[in-house]
Amino acid sequence: MTDHAINHDIAALLPRLRRFARTLVYHREDADDLVQAAIERALARSGQWEPGTRLDSWMFRIIKNAWIDEVRSRMRRDRLFAPEEAGEHVGDGYAEAHQQRMAIEKAVSMLSDEHRMVVALVLVDGMPYKEAAEVLEIPMGTLTSRLVRARAALQELLSDQARTVK
Image 1 (cartoon, rainbow, N blue to C red):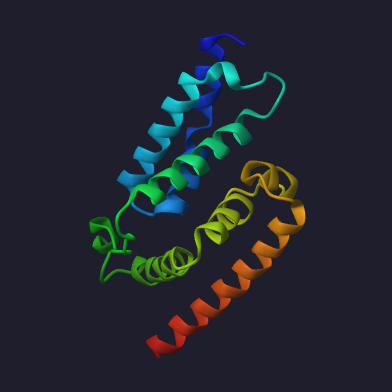
Image 2: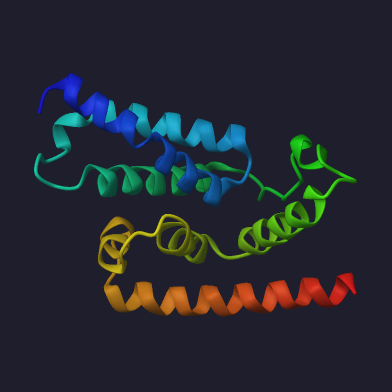
């Protein structure tokens, strides 16, 4: 595959890559930085990608590894703060749906990195279990058990949030 063709194919994946990164990071700017770092790595190592294999899985794996590298390099854990744009629609009909979305984002952010990655690939991106297991480089059984635990944790976190609001 030519450099132009791989560049075009990676560009076509940008919405999915950004969505995956936003699920991991939640801050738009940090997600964009993560995607940029992954694309830089991919382009620098484009010779390592094997034509005939799934480019999207390769790119998701690069993002996952870039995120792990970032987490390891941070001196302290990030805290979830609502981005400035989260307050744009306060007081209108959009607010309730927006609050629900923020509650879900907060709950997902409280999951471990392993659970967040599984949720991002399977539940958010809709990736089949087998491909998600390959991206995360884990056995299928591990993926399914992490997904079950992540769903249970999300349900518990969201019900706890609902109880505190009432």
